[in-house]
Length: 206
Image 1 (cartoon, rainbow, N blue to C red):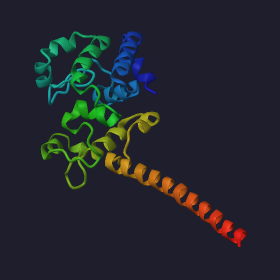
Image 2 (tube, rainbow, N blue to C red):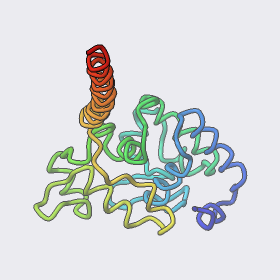
Image 3 (cartoon, helix red, strand yellow):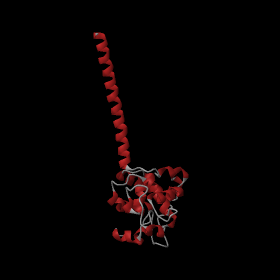
Image 4 (cartoon, helix red, strand yellow):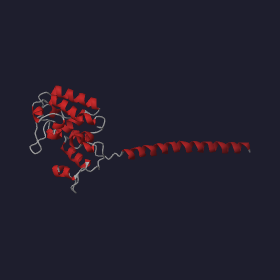
């Protein structure tokens, strides 16, 4: 799915092994990580955003590096494989909460939106900084972000993005409704069967 991009790295084998181990430890699809890296840096470990100073495979912001006791120089001097350790360090506070590619990208882009639905609206300033993620009305939602994200992925990777609303309460309600319907069917089917038997016995007795 991302073979062409991965093969651009100088340390492809060790990087993919480290990335897969990270994905295993965090219980997510390694292709989710590759998709985020594709969008953020195009697999360039030393990519620097001239506007924000974000750097590296997942574009660590300067303030993020400060919070991790790292510097831009640390990223510049690190191989792709070594940066997986920094990505692990960054994602550790969100371990157990990353259940989709949407969640993983929100962890990198705007952590407050992890686990939120597609209609979750981010602050207006996010749209000012990232106009490509805006809806026609200027708002920015998880869906508008992931729609743009999906469009930038290789065609074969676009199915990794979930753009179907999945409200946990709605899902649970649907399951309960279906389950209740099944139980009701068997309950009334059983009562109907018993009723027939009783009527038959009365006719036989008479």
